[in-house]
Image 1: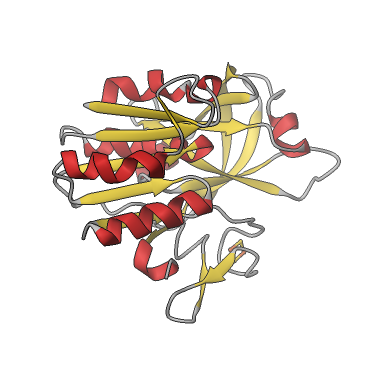
Image 2 (image 1 turned 180 degrees about the horizontal axis):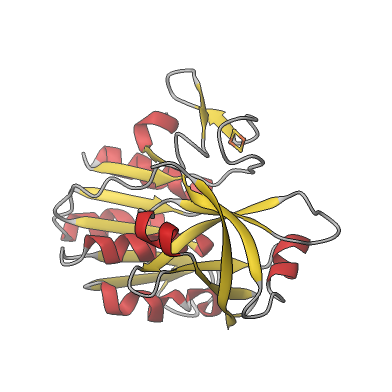
Length: 255
Ligand code: FES
């Protein structure tokens, strides 16, 4: 699928948790083409950084309405500016970009941490009606507003928080081995902090499960032309996360 530049219209831009927003854009062609795991590269018309785009994972699409949902956290001036963009405003958007998840599996287990849960929402919807288990982790209960987002599209939901304010106290990787033993999973899909994904990939390998990881890297062009997003592959080759990823088989990027 060839990525294209498109002027999209903001349909909603609402606060859904502390510092986290859901942006819905009308982009019929992109909504039609977007696959789970892909992202868009949004130009934020912030006067302090006018040339920079922000890569944001696609969290959902509504092909009937021609819209795409993006869930983002304010992490700097660009996303802070984006949070103030009103309904009706036009944005310059490139997408859909990158390689998404491969959906072939029978019994998926989705493991997400923090904002890494955003692309897993669209993935879970695409995997329905397969039985879907989601293991999600956050620092506190407030970070796991995702529970309500995933509840309609998954069969089993397990939560961990660093402080124990909800779910099991600890990290996703602490409970992952037991969850694997109890389930009959064949594939793990993971997105979140890199150390978490490395551990998830290691555990998946120990239990003989396929594992796909969605990497997050700094990006500039988003089109494979600048190498800003490159990371080391296990074969010694540099991999461009924007065009060869962001989704990789774990064995391609984690040794
Ligand atoms: Fe330029 Fe990936 S962001 S090559």
